[in-house]
Image (tube, rainbow, N blue to C red; front, side, top):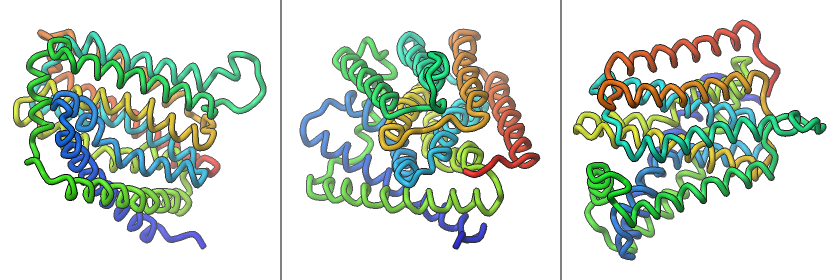
Length: 341
């Protein structure tokens, strides 16, 4: 029996709360264990802290892929990328202009652009080669994305051995973020990691069940629900982290968190989901991927103008473009609901 809309939204909300709590416990415990084993704070910050806010999305999308809700996964990952740039970065720049580190423009932004282009190519590869079969991501494509993620992490670890390549101010801020929590005992840190993983697993299943139930109750596609409601809810950690960084005057760290999160989402989470189960390209999926590409390309001119600063008017532009695109997608979905899933 399909749950009602109220019950579905309740399950989804409970799942998101458990995901956020689990992600926080996992990151704090993992950081403490890394420090106990002598891992440099900069390395911890560039890996665990930078990507820890995406743990809720990973858990939810692994659950979605395992149950066959691949349209939800596609919508959530592309929607989270759009939400990070349009909503999170847009609001952050409106609160305080965001300073752009030259190292980020040389390294992480080109990697993000390459990731989006690779994703587009993989989704269209069967059609481009004249082969039969649905467009989308196969298990082989998932493996390619995961290899790309491994290469990106390797690049971060090499940069961590030479802080000057990261950028001195950003290196200091990232190291400070890694040291924020007092050093805890390894038994407590281990319990936090295991507890965080348990909450992520349970919350991921609850969130996926609630999101799919809401899509069925509203007569909307899983892709649209993932693109809008789920992506905003699972991007809350990035929003909170970035706004706090901006308020502390660490706006360059906010941009690095957003770009790193998008790379993590598209390479690791989407790659993991495709490895679990083939992810067909949903109806309208190409338009959404092109929107992700457009927002990514827009970051380059916005980053280098006005003395390497994303200003308040530019933040407003990102925010308005995001609202316009999401509003258009909702209008399309409500005017002509897609066949489920």
